Length: 332
Image (cartoon, rainbow, N blue to C red; front, side, top):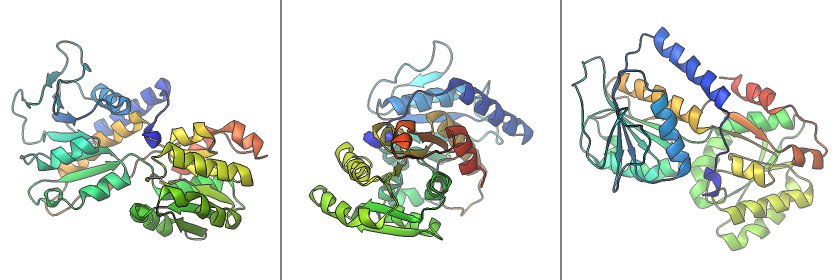
């Protein structure tokens, strides 16, 4: 899908991030635990996430890859990891301190994972906010005998507003086109938008998008594309980008794809960053006391992407991506 695209990773930065994360684990005295990863599709971003997740595994710990509904993808060299095809297997029984964690990658695997028997701590990774909202109706997600963590693939709305403030410090009117399914994201944005003049208009269907934008554009200093049905539709996203370009308004979003297609900037999280955070969330879930409930985390840290061609066209002189990334992450 359009909003799910990720660019090539900066391997040097990922290496430094991996070293920093490993140092944190050692400093906290964390022990290596077995990890079972469930995948149900062949999306490139999910395959990359799993590869980087495996590469961050501590030496000597177990890594089982389970392909739901088909053969496992070739992610491991012979003799490295135990990869099963639809059946989970184990090596030695872990000690009580080494609690095994199951991790489901993507919404299809997440739906299957919460229905599977077992009491291992469960992490649902690479989900959009709307993916998670659709899962919340399933009572299996609220089982009291299993701890569950959810890692959203997008940074928080607060991070996005921090980015917009860094790029347009004198502007406060932010226009957003939403759909009825976007309501949880809109509420998060409204909670974070203290001091902003948030202009939200709802498009009931694709045919009404143009008329909604005609109402919204004159009341806005910038437009934002949410990670919803509009952000997941290339045609709808391009409509917002064209409306912004026609009015000389910058458009912000939550995906690399939007920036490449003509958006000004977005705070995103790479598969490598998400893999490290997912592993840390697994440790939190494993250590959580009874009754904790579902632990939900937005993607963090964020990495800022900027379309410098669009910035020049709008006559904007904005900081470099690295400086903007530091500003977004400075508030953590």
